[in-house]
Length: 149
Image (cartoon, rainbow, N blue to C red; front, side):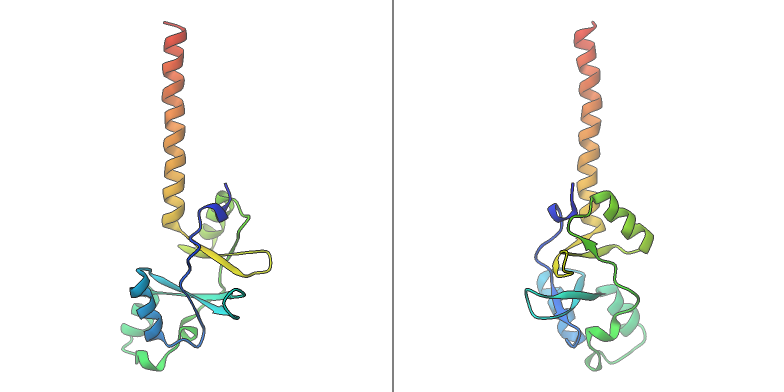
């Protein structure tokens, strides 16, 4: 299965000069915990970072910084981990694990934002797949009992 089949396509995104307060309001309005920071116009947005609700708490609120003086670009740290839309779920998990991230923007071959995948998304799909495997085992045992009473 490819990550493009499970990623969330409606991504809350904002240019790097978006005021941090506005980004927090976007998170609240859309009931998400992150805003993908982008360069480029809508339809050609390239992700350059992610700002999470946790980032705001740890980097702004906990340090008693003035939220009105900051933009989302001010909170971008480290190199952004993205996943190609044709990556397998296993490769996606490996990439996220190696980087220690819980979410990753999904990009097309040109690096344009097409979605986002989170640890929650992956756990849900993989749990469903494991449940299916468990049913195969149970059905195999049932079948053998029917064939060899």
